[in-house]
Amino acid sequence: MVAAATGNLHTLFDMKGETDLVTTVTTTGALSFDGIGMTFPDGTEALRNITFSIDKGEFITVVGPSGCGKSTLLRIASGLLDPTAGSVEVDRERLGYVFQDATLLPWRTVRQNIELLAELHGFDSAERTRLSTAAIELVGLTGFENHYPKSLSGGMKMRTSLARTLTLKPPVFLFDEPFGAVDEMTREHLNEETQRLFQSEGFAGLFITHSISEAVFMSTKVYVMSARPGRIIAGFDVPFSYPRQPELRFNPDFAQLSGEVSLALRGSSS
Ligand SMILES: Nc1ncnc2c1ncn2[C@@H]1O[C@H](COP(=O)(O)OP(=O)(O)OP(=O)(O)O)[C@@H](O)[C@H]1O
Ligand SMILES: [Mg+2]
Image (cartoon, rainbow, N blue to C red; front, side, top):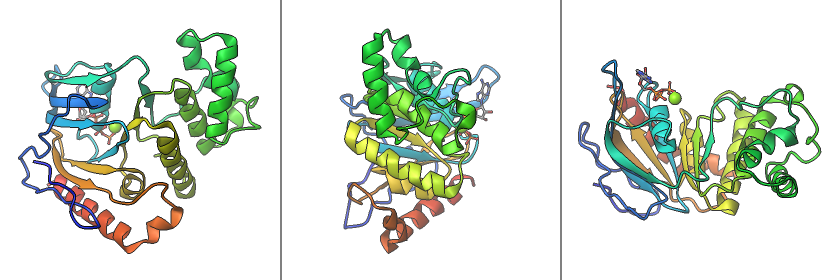
């Protein structure tokens, strides 16, 4: 059962290993998982009884050991994969989904890449230009519109990928380790930009990462998954107000919360 927030720091949900701790489903959530299980045809049980929901204005990050089913959970949310148990509720019409790889088309410029999803959704040229100009500005790529991907840094490629998804104004935004391949300084900048976008765009965010600092810095809540079959074994409310400043990372409360997430994560693989 999810505990309510206490004190001025955070809440560590009761950790009882096998017990499913997050049991409250809010069907009005922007994205709701209810009893999700996934066993692949070869018998691999990737997920077991995942139940939680994300409301508008929430940014939830899931951390967990490699292979515990995090990407599988996002694929189920997006409809790419059908779960073998349970159900998902989400509006897939304008679902945002960014991956670890920026997946840009090398023969298209930054602007043309950013307009791709709007094109596939049938927006006319004037509307595409308007949407891409706004998205380019939001991610700080103004001046690079006519560059090709090969002349962009890793961080700029990820900004392009984010901007491409932002053109859809997604009410729900899924992120699968999007900043895993960039250096730490760039990652921190991208984390700051992402929480700014979360604030300005108001989407419900579900973010996957291996970085505890990234999780705590951006999120309203952090869930920890067990080793496969992935279950939610702990959850932490993150109490810091937005916009969060870079210096927050040096705050003792930030360090303490990160330490507790880390402890839960260590326990998760045993
Ligand atoms: N199509 C599939 N068929 C069989 N097993 C699969 C399939 N897809 C994923 N798996 C298995 O399901 C488990 C979860 O995979 P998933 O990619 O979701 O893990 P993850 O938590 O995202 O890992 P990482 O942190 O390394 O990205 C793994 O054991 C993986 O081998
Ligand atoms: Mg993965």
